[in-house]
Image (cartoon, rainbow, N blue to C red):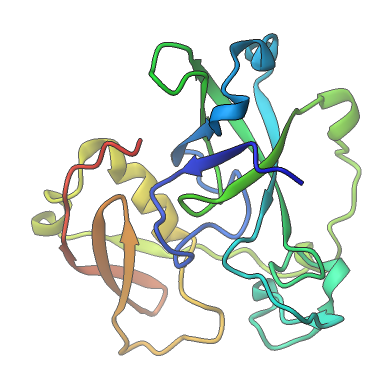
Amino acid sequence: MKIIARIRSDFPTKFGIPRQSGRVEELTACIVFEPEYRVREAVKGLEDFSHIWLLWEFSQSIRESWSPTVRPPRLGGNERMGVFATRSPFRPNPVGLSCVKLEKIDLESKEAPVLIVSGADLMDGTPIYDIKPYLPAADCHPEALGGFATKVEQHFLQVEIPEEWKARIPEDKRTALEGVLREDPRPAYQKDPERIYGMPFAGMDVHFQVKNGILTVCEITGYKKSDRI
């Protein structure tokens, strides 16, 4: 398959990316087409849809071999499930599927058309193979069963960012960062309350600690204004 576009997001690494699309609606990203597909006629009519499907590659999780079972983070990484019953990136074919909100189509930039989306769960630079409109009548099934994913209690962390560090976060990135931290970006198998974690996000290095369900930002370094988004 041919790569038609790449995403530009605030996540230079996999760490901290929400486990599913749409979990943090404040996250914005840009979909930039490869030169061959940078044709305005190709997105004609797409502006009438509120959401789109992205078919993309787990480019950082490609392996020569595969396992029929994986350890879903949803189960704390302690129980194995069949790979086809999960959304694990470690699959026979490293293909991902995400539903994101289409905020606007930029037709003015030098790379136009560029799709501005929110709620994406993709790392910066991720290759995209296809884009399709989300159709509520066909794609929405309120009666659908969620399997083991719905049997695990949702948990969110309380996020505390001291004013000295909050002042270092660009105003247009604060809500998105708080949303990412609230989702608990730590690997499922790492719950050491004394450990300080570091997460790159939007040109910053965010350091935090989690104790008793409260995530506290300890330090923010390395911020530099980026023109990526």
